[in-house]
Image 1 (cartoon, rainbow, N blue to C red):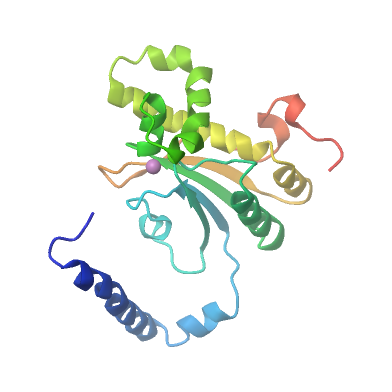
Image 2 (cartoon, helix red, strand yellow):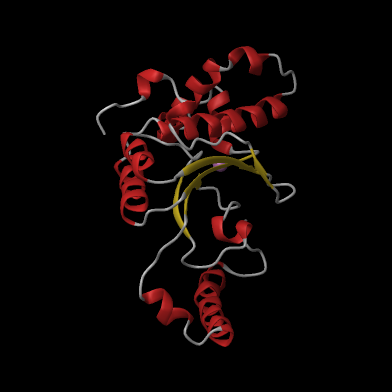
Length: 218
Ligand code: CO
């Protein structure tokens, strides 16, 4: 949302001014806040969320700096051709040893809704084209939903479920499961009520995925 109370220049400078306020508020709470953070991070969570400006991981979960390692892209996709995502996954799982991975979608996701449609707007269509594959996989269920908004909401949930499954198929994740506990969760955020819904699609071992995806030699 652009802020109409401010000119474009004021709006920009507001961020730097807010930062000074953030620093003084934090120091008031805990004079060593930044010193402690500067020593390193050991977050318990990896967040895979949508780039949408209305779904800020820390704010909606009431967490602070240092608690969540974050990857965001349009429509929260887990893509094994995405070097950025794979690097984030590797670092958080193998080095930081996060204990939970949360894939968080959101109702009203523009990326998911665009994937349901047939309008080409450019580059982003390539990125979200795999959501059309999710749609086709669940076409029976989805086409039975008459209301388009409700059908979109269900596709948002199914997209999260599929991304959780995609994570479970990645050898890096399966190797971690051989040595320790790591849970993958699927959530959906409601833009209109601010609430997170746990879809209960947890994967914490190889059981949830078909045999053909289970690597034997990790
Ligand atoms: Co979105």
